[in-house]
Amino acid sequence: YQREKILSPDSFIHKRLILAYAIGQRFTNTGWLSYPGKDKKLQEISLYTIGEDLDLLGAIGGELFDGNSFSAPIISGTILLLKQKFPTLTVFQIKEALLESADRTFVVEDKKNLKKVTFVYESDTEKPNLAPFKDKKNRSHMKFNPELYGKGILNLRSAFLYAELKLKNPHLTSKKLRQQMKYILKKRHATSVTKIQALFRGHRVRKKLKSL
Image (tube, rainbow, N blue to C red; front, side):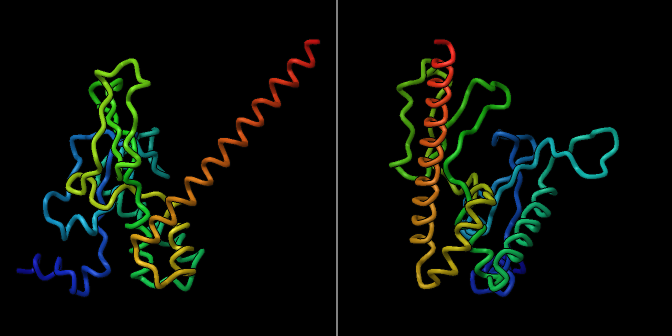
């Protein structure tokens, strides 16, 4: 009864709750990995962070730590950073920013065979083309599944951008805001690639001139 009461979308706790899950480095599946499962109420409030091979402050002998327990402080720290940057954000806006900005397109490696990778994609337009890969046996793709990943994997940069867009456009739905966020991030990425290519071309020209 208590579980159903807490997970009711109208409950005081559910409106403020984020379930913290951990995933391995490079998003590999691990022995301690948990899943939201088929319960849509859990899926809507589940958020993943990296929780493998963590180097903790004060750890003795360089010991690395794993587990779901480390996701909660990572998410809490992100909330603090968001609140510092955007002090007018409400609890509900912060929760929305974290969940709706989460990564749902990423690459998952097989822990037993690192050559084997799965490309997880959110929408059909983001479905990767596997044709260029020579090793097709170890390449596959899968549409994002909330039963496995809830709302996705925490992305600090995306969360900050989403929060900024939320404050500027409070009337927009989370779907519209996510679309705007992804468009801006894609544009920024394209600009960065263009700059890197230009720098590389300039380097080649200068190198060629020196050799003359």
